[in-house]
Length: 112
Image (cartoon, rainbow, N blue to C red):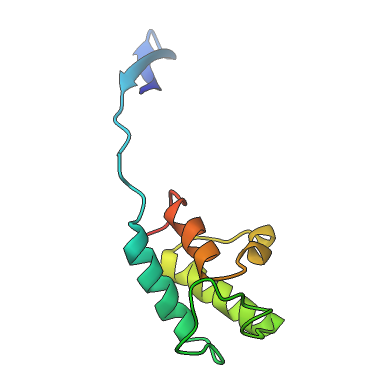
């Protein structure tokens, strides 16, 4: 990938900008492995009060597990902290179960 670079040089008491490009490599494979994300999401979910030990990854938070809005917010906040990302408000309702959270974090380029 070519990246633009600006170089400043001094010519007779004034600065002159020259633009050129350099090659930069983009890291490949920077996304997290699914197995790791599943384990971490389950660990976080188990730390939320009311999350059953025997819940399945496709159990719906509201319909099956009877999560209220406070439990869902707590889960979302803990997941954001766990993966070092800021979750926009509109994404909070997309986490309907563990699988949806795993899918989000395995495809998030900044999740760590």
